Image 1 (cartoon, rainbow, N blue to C red):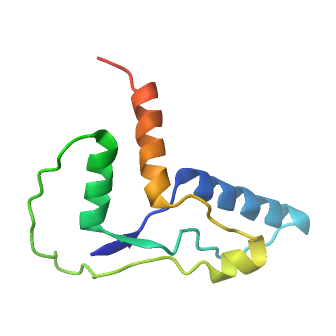
Image 2 (spheres, rainbow, N blue to C red):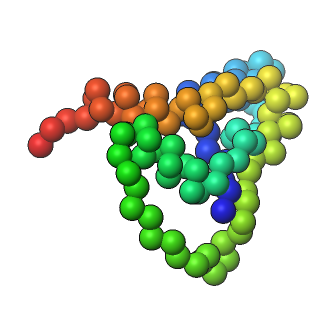
Length: 109
């Protein structure tokens, strides 16, 4: 399976651009898809997380669940055209960055 994952900084940038767009001409609305449009397989995602942690993943392969699909991703064409939305962080950069942030900020029990 392949999924489209988006780094939080890119989502925040898209939300802020949407809020600025609304404020430009008074109350108005539209639908903006915020994502990355760059998919990664579940296997590669697990490997990326494991390597970023310096660990080996234990993988238990299971059949696809009812209703699941092989690939999903965001069509961000409208958001690019109207908002100038342009995600910048590839998952290969975002996962290690998130892990570093988490390790620096987690609270010990």
